[in-house]
Image (tube, rainbow, N blue to C red):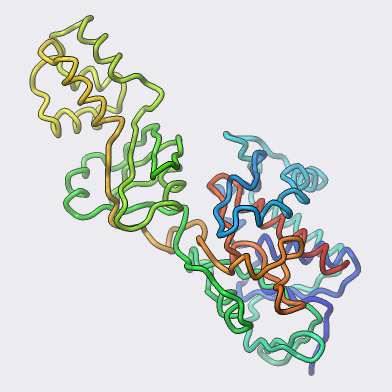
Length: 395
């Protein structure tokens, strides 16, 4: 038996649910399909279980895309304040943590319950544990093969995400559907992901595992100033996750540890105050002690501060605050928060997310070549792209 809908949405994640609730509340008959056992699984695990659901500062400059202007329309038409109004409508307590990042006070599940309630208000039908088979163009829309039947719809919205966190069910379905209908897909790679180091460097830094320090991490002209964490695999922490979206294999990154400190001036002052102390001791007043010890040993700083010339102190400062490291790779999709790249935005209408060459076919959220920074930006893209798509479907 074939059942017909106005819209079928593939994917019950952030973008898919937002699109479905918008279209449903505008009077369309909407079906959402997902192969997972529960909706919004990536929402549930995000933000340490509290969901960093948006960022107050989200704008086009916070996104990476083949066309830096593509996201402007959606982000302008559905802002962080718009989503916050929805959160407050459902009386979900929230707080701003840092850098404009908004989190639930209680649980990420509050956001999922909110979206499900809004979908219910639009009479949206949700089918879980429902693998999708063949997707075909029909005379007046699309035909989707499911276990035990076929559904048809005037419009098909692909919101199945990227390849990140495969244990949560991530697949490349969106890319396969795009290619099936002739839409180009840009190179995809893990993003917002910890970076790994080659064995010799990992051994050299092994004593630093578990140490966190404020840092500015740079790749070319791009830099992020947030915490850095040394791990048993390499480097992590917000600053590293951010720069991973820009880094490429074979490139070096530059670490400036405690970048707000004028290290050269502090070392000269320490030399004046107590020239007999070891350099490691002076560094230990600024850096975590194990990190200070690492630099003292690596730079063979055995003489006391009094015996260190200005040139020597400048070299120490450079080693700490212009430290060039060449990562070996990343931890991959297993731990990546998002996928960089995706359905080429040149093939989509930025106002509706519809494929220019395939009327009725839409792509939204992470599967599109729009990737946000760490800190709620990718959720805001999901809400915004889902919103404009849902509105366009009902126009």
